[in-house]
Image 1: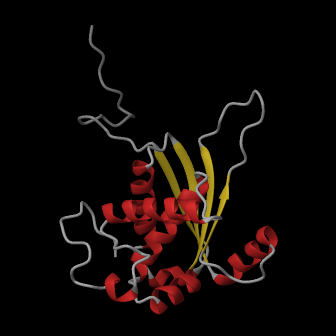
Image 2 (image 1 turned 135 degrees about the horizontal axis):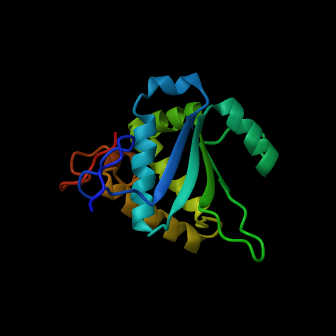
Length: 192
């Protein structure tokens, strides 16, 4: 006896490929309306990063905010009364005898600081945004740049991830970043 498909559930067509990563992008500042692709840019960057570091099933939130909000967070959590481009808030580790949660934390990105840095460094806004999203994501996974060795490892990984989405080396000198020779080849998906 065969069963008829449920009238209330959609039929599956072929194999559905579900991402192991759930990314919620929350816009907390109207300034982000100037960058209508921002949500797509950060999701693309985070998915590329997750694939590069073989991230298991995970959930995170990216908050697209402004300088005022990030200044308050930076003051409260880092003791620095100044805006910054990106802050990462890793989820607490599970306690003893508690199952691990798929939630890995939150990333907050400030619009004005991101825009100022992009202009000052001669970078397209969306490419700089992609770099900040990857940078913040790697912090959620425990990567850091507190010493030279860790900084080099984190920067190498950022370069590798960003290259996969056609974002040139963010640490290259300004003249190389916009060079027509930068990023030759056919990347799978471009950002910016």
